Length: 102
Image (cartoon, rainbow, N blue to C red):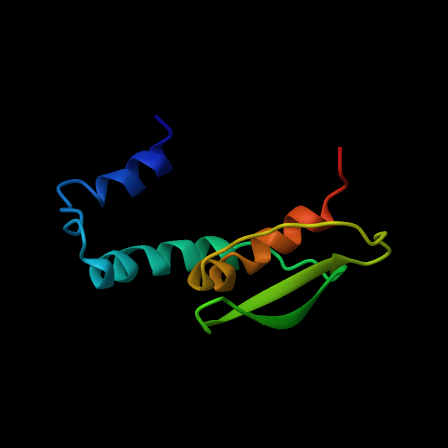
């Protein structure tokens, strides 16, 4: 095993995962990890965003973010993300759009 990976995994040895249903503890555990992963990547300058909102059948307001790569042709798109994940995965989403499509 790579020594750097072994060192990182060793720091988690013996850690007890949060109890099933303990949402606050799970968020406290994962948000810093996911956030660090998202901010470790450069944010492409060729992808712009705009914020939108829609209303669900029960009246709940749902925030949405639209991503557009500079010069892209308009077309259909679907991207779902829990609000917290949208916030921490912004750089990842922009990076995927910025790369050439295959």
